[in-house]
Every structure is written in structure tokens, then in C-alpha cells.
Length: 384
Image (tube, rainbow, N blue to C red):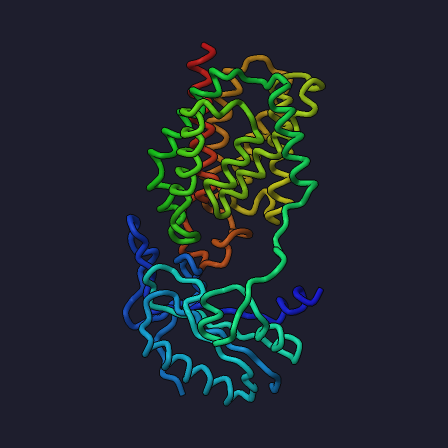
């Protein structure tokens, strides 16, 4: 499509003089005053390289977008616009459009991202076309009118699948009762809230420093529904809460995890045992997350911890000693999480960060280890 062809022409690089000071967390990374960070993430992730500051000294149409990351003054942005324009023109490029604004900020980070887009007559026409966006409207000084038709539609098939899963959740007997579901849910929330700062710290270098906070949002939303007596043992309901309350990558990933489990409910009557059912749930979840996120087992993500769970269930799917399986789950998931700290990063935002900086376990995998321990502990207490 035209949009796909345009996307291949866009190249963005972020550089900054400082990290962003995240409220309640602190600076996302430390940077000497005489250096700049190159290739850092919009949310404060460390970059791929650091270099000393430098002074400023192919022929096709380009559009340049100067994005203030939050902490630069108007004067500084104007200087950057002038220097960028001069530099690009000296390289032989014809600059058709240059736009400067706070398109996407990183709190108070004193930095800028510069996006260069190769343009032709059609793309220039599209860039100048009407759109509903206050920032774009103000800087382009073009009269705008609301789009007549919405561009984002919910797929009917997705809605049908959700409704089908919800009906199955409510009709079929899941391999756990509501009483255990309640105590287990509260324990998972307790453990994740206790480790919120720890997970944020693990996420500081390679992520947004918010892994723990994002999971805490999801936990609090689940407990809110539980306290309102509107939550039942439903994977589909947990998927919806994850998607709406958590946001970000974690919200999408956990929504996929619970949605995959909901689909497995359809074959619950055919499973040989409870362990076999959970094996199929985790396997389907890993496959779905991998399909949509493009990560694989071994890429040093939460999939590695989930795979440890899958292996335990696979090795013991005919075993009836559930307490033994519970102990093995705790041991193997924790071991997998720690082992992954030394593996090469191949997926996620952390894969773009200098490998020397990322020495701790993956925060997503660590979170899986935490809630698996919580579930195991409550299982042992509830069914002793």
C-alpha cells in the first residue's frame, strides 16, 4: 500500500544532552555533561552509543520534523532547526517542508528527535492535507475540518471472538474455583505491588522504567472489579482489563496471554488432566504473543519464563502430585529468569541498547517469576 511504501522512507534518530527525570523514579540513565546520548528511546531508554559533543559546521525532496523531547527552549529549537536545515541543504537535499513541535515528549528531557522523510508530489499533498490534530494544525497554519468518517474500526470478527470467549468462560467449568481465583488474584496483586519499584528499576535501562507501575495498574483494576463483585473467573474479562487498564506493551501482551487461554477453554472437556489444560493454555499464549510481537523463546523476554512454565507442565502432564509440580514451577521459572540475564538480547526495546548496559534479568520475565511464585504459594495453602 501507499502507507507501507511511505513508511520505508522514514528514518528517525534521537539524541539528547540529558535523560528524562521520571516522576517518582528519577533519571532514566546517567550521562556526563560533555557527552550526548545517540539512539535513545522516547521513553528514556538508554541509547546505542555515547559520543562527545561536536560543533556544527543525493538530491531528492525531503520533509524534516524537529521533535522537542520536552526540555528545550524555543530559542534552542530554533537554532536546531536552522542548523539542521543548513546541514541537510549542504548535503544536497531539497527541503520541501520543515515542521517543529512537541509531537511526542519524554517529560523534561533536554533533547530532540529529527525525522527526515523522502517526499514526492503525492506525499507533500498528503502532508498538507486536512487532518484533526491540534499540534499539526497550529504549526502548518492550515484551516482544518474534522474527518467525516472514522478511520479506526473494530473488526467484527474480533468482537465475535470476544463474545464467544465470554460465553464459554461463563458456561464451562474452569479448572479452578471462584474462591481460589479470588485469593490467588489478591496474592498476585500483593506480590507485584511489593516489587513495583524493583521491576521499574529492571526496566530502567532497556525500557520505559514503568514495567512495575504498568502491572500495578492492571492489578488494581482487577481488584477494583473484584471488590465491586463484577469479576468472575473469566480469561476474557482479564484480557479486557489488561488491555484497557494497563496500556503499553505489557497491556497488549497480557491481553494476548489471557485471550489465548480463553480460546483454550473451548477444548477443556477434551483435556486429559488439569496439567494438560494449563500446558495447552501456556503453549497457545506463547504462540500468540510470539506471532503478534515477533519475539521468540530465547530472545531474552518474558516468553523465556513462560516457556519454563510450559516445560514443567509438559514434563509432568500425567502427574497427579500437584504439590511437586508447584515446587518445580517456582524453581524452574526463577532459574530461567536469572539465566536469561546473560543471554543476548534479540527482541524488545532493550535489544537496541548497548548490551554492556543491560546486565539484569528481563523485567517481563521477572514479573512472570513473581506471579508464578504467588500462585504456587496460594495453591499450596488453599489445597493443603
